[in-house]
Each structure stands twice: as C-alpha cells, then as structure tokens.
Length: 524
Image (cartoon, rainbow, N blue to C red; front, side):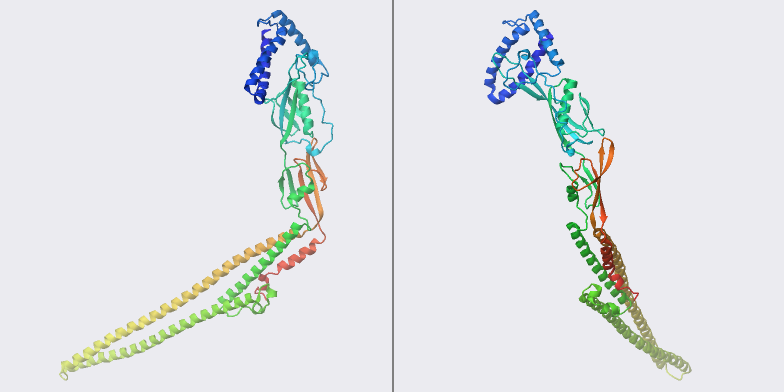
C-alpha cells in the first residue's frame, strides 16, 4: 500500500511540474501559486476517499487496499482489450469507468504504408534517419464539474536519436529492436515504429521521422563532370545530366569548347611556325649565311600562317647579325694587319741592327790587333768598343719590341677566337632551348588535337544505365531522361557515335598537321 502511494505521488509530481512550467510562462508565478493551492485542496477531496485519507490527513489502510485493487482491475481490463476506447477530444466528457485512469491509444498498424507514393521517398540502405518519440499521457478529471482533459506530451530522449539503415534495410532501435524499413516512406515508418513501440513497450507515442542524410548518386561516362552528386527529391536522369554537362556534338557547351580548342590549335601552330622560322635563322647564322632558305624568304604569310612582316623581320635580324659578325672580323683583320706591319718593320730593323752589331764587333777585334802592334792608338779602340756596346743595346731593344708585337698579335687573335666561340655557343644554346620549346609546343598541339577529336564525336543520343541496390541485390536498369533516380544509384552514360564524326576528324587532322616544322624542314 505504501509503495503504491509513493508511485502515485511521483507521477503526480511529474505531471504537476510539467503543467506548472507552462502555467508560470503564461500567467505568472503569483497566479500559479494561488491555483496550486486550490488544486491541492481539490486533490485531497477527490483522492482522499480512494486512498483512505481522512480530512485530518490520516490513512485508512482497509479502504485504500480496496480502492487499489479496483484500480488495478480496471487497468488490466484496458490492457487486454483488442480495441480500446480512443482518447477523447479535448473538452468532451470522459466515461465514468475511465475517470481516474490514463487512456492508451493503439496506433494503426499500416495507416500510411498502403498509400502509393514516389519510390524516391522510400528508405534505402545507407539512409540516416532521425526518430523522435513523443509519449502521450491523459490526466483524469471530475465528471460532475465537467472539467476538460489535459493531454501531456513529452519527448522520450532515451529512445530518440539518429539511426542508419543497414545493408539489409533495417533499423536497430533502442528498447524496440530491429524493424525492416526498406522502401518505406517516412509516414509509414512513423506509423510502424509507433505500433511496434506500443506492442513491445506498451508505449502510447507519436513518432516524428526525418532524413538527416541520404546516399549520393554516382555518375560516370560521357559527361564533362563525372563524380558524385547529392540526391534531391524528383531528381531525374535529364536533370542529373544537365548538372554534369552533356558531351553531345550538338551541345552548346561542346560547340563552344570545340571553338576554343580550334583557336588554341591555330595559336599553337603559329607559335610552332614562328619557332621553326627562328630555328632557320639561327642555323643560317651559324653557317655564316646572310639569307634565309629560299622558300622561307619568298613564302607568303598564307603559306606559313605567319604575317609577311614576321618573315621580313627574321630576315633583317639575320642580316644584322651577319653584318655585325663581318664588321668584327674586318676589325680583327685590320688590327691583325697593323700588328703584322709593325712586326715586319721591327724585324727588318732588328736585322739591320744585327748586321751593325756584327760590323762593330769585327772592327773592335781588328783595332785590338792594330793597337797591340802599335799601329793605332788606344783611343780609336775605345771608340770602336763604345759603338759595339751601343749596337748591342739597340739589338736587345729591337728584339724585345719584336717579341712584344708578336705577343700582342697572339693575344688579339685569341680574343677574337674566344668572342667568336662565345657567339657560336650562345647560338647553339638558343637552338637547344628552341628545340625544347618546339617539343613542348608539339606535345600541346597533340593534346589539343586529341581533345578536338574527342569533342568532335557526335551523338544521336546517350545510353544511360543505372545500377540500383534492391532487396534481391544489385540490378541494372536502362533509363530514359524522365527516369527518377533513387539515393545510392550508380549511373553510367555511354555516347553513341555519329556517322559524320570521321569526316570531321579527318578535316581537323589535316588542318592541325600543317605546322611550321614541316614547312621549314631541311628536306626540300
């Protein structure tokens, strides 16, 4: 008896707190206190006879046990009913047999599951659902005073949460267990979970179900932007291809792309032709030629794809380089010739001085003999010796001058050779860099041509297939533009080639094959 009284007290306190919070928000604290005192007095008057409580607060144990047994019998009868009475509408009188009990409403088993709806609204494996349980409770009232029912609804946070649909298409819910939901709509899931919670937990609840996340749709094949796309309601194949970008021959975006690629190919061809023209100029300069190849010098701009002024400019550059080199060589020859003249003059002077020195040396020897015989004086011998020494000094100076001139010529010749070698090396380095640039341009041209070949492939249409997971595994569906997609679908797009594609490809290859490298090759 005491435990039953405690349970009733706890339930009453819980309900009172919920009602009290709403009343304080609406009417204010003072008004709620006054109403609470009145409710306590009414509760004592109504519950006193049932629980055996006298007016002085004393409990009559015999009366309480009899009333408790009666309440238990009523509750048992309610739980065993196949079709219990529905919860009365607010304001309608409650039957006397249920005036002090909480009404349980059995949820319908398939209230929404039999209704037809969009297949995209059905649950698929990988869906993430949010389920919220809202439990309903009804408070008893006094039939004589015709007071209305106060329905209390509160969320069961211990049961609510976010749940993922497994690969088998089921949900694992706390306290409720596994529920198969594959292909069911949200209203159907709400009714099914409410019914299952009632059957297993005797829980009178309303369920709110929402999608938190849905599996993405994968797309591959003949589209500009393959990848994964978020699922949206009423998403069709046509809308998906519009997002991803079609690659059909008549697609406006494809036509613009083809025009851009053709312009890029023409630009790269002109660059390649210009590089080839520069290559011919460098090779002609290395060969000490003053004119470009005859066909290059006389070719029109239409033949090369270049402006005639560009060809003329390269010819002028070659001529200027050739003239500059010729000027350096003429300067080199002039300086070397001048040094050769000075060396020749110095060598002839050296030869005269050498003969003069020999003459004075012989005279000194001759006078020395005469002096010993007393035929000539010593002064004459000394004078001859002085002249001999002067001639010897002149001989040394002239020899040194000849050597200096020859050394200068050697240094000048070496400096000219080094300058010529550096100039040749710079041209060879330029040719090497030019060849690398030509290789890069040729690779870019090949890439653009391949892209053009890809974009020129026309389509009568596209074949779209969908791989879809179902209860019996993955199935393949041939879809139309109006086919509605489901979360987790794997879409493959295949383009059907147009009969006019080979002719267009042949024209592109023919135009892009005419590059400057072929026009200015050395094979003609």
